[in-house]
Image 1 (cartoon, helix red, strand yellow):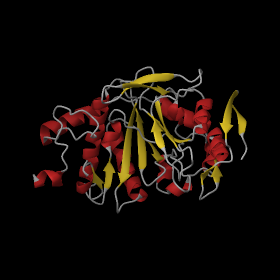
Image 2 (cartoon, helix red, strand yellow; image 1 turned 30 degrees about the horizontal axis):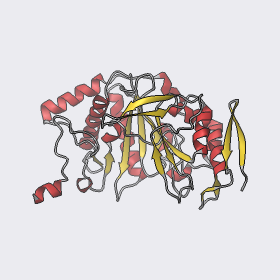
Image 3 (cartoon, one colour; image 1 turned 120 degrees about the vertical axis):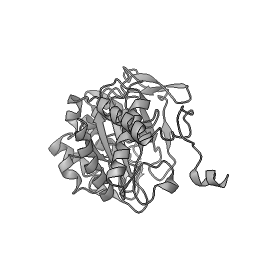
Image 4 (cartoon, one colour; image 1 turned 90 degrees about the vertical axis):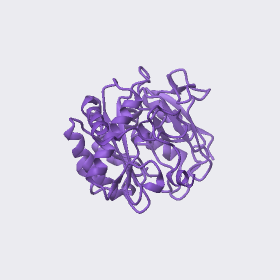
Length: 335
């Protein structure tokens, strides 16, 4: 096994140790293959990560080995790679790395990072999200095609409220839709906006969409995971590799591509030539920043007319005033 290689990344040298280590045994992809993938899509990957506090999902022994999430910046962080201090729901703090140049992506890949999980904030203001991230998660019995159908309805719904979404594959069976917003609202307000949209989708597609937090209540539907907008919840970034045997990629798409796509179309081998041909199809997201006033007014109407209040937070979050019980319904009935 080769000791190390030096990669030139936009003029900065990045050392890659153990380049021949196999990371994806089913396909035979090595650590060097991973690094060359991220070199090929560096511009797009950085667009999704730039200036964002980023958690690293590391697989030092490949996808069949143990993995872990690294939230705090590694101690050997280069001096050229900045950090930002973020607050967890517990009130504790951490300094997370904030990529500002392509070399940061490759430096993290050398640590065995396959999937990047950036916060929806920038290091200049870590309290106000600048993206809504709407995670459409197919439950057992549903699939990617079902998530696509929900995404298309969501696109129309966003337009009704003066918003626009940008879709990407999750790298698995789901679809992620991003909405760039002005960084003027809190995490709680951004989460409330996603809940309001989820409730409309649930009403329009009652046989296909659920916003139920408890799995036992979701049924064979696509779950709109509104808690991905809660503080310290992140999703795989654009162009992130996923820890799946086929080395699939969470891939930005145009809306007109979505209905013909399958997640397996986009992997370590196929995405670089796509990127070389099309570039980053989400590059124009940076030109937009929408307001949330209309969707928060929708949330107010839902509360006033339907009595629709808050939804449960994840278990590691402190209890919020007005939040419903966090006790699983079937367990609550037994008591």
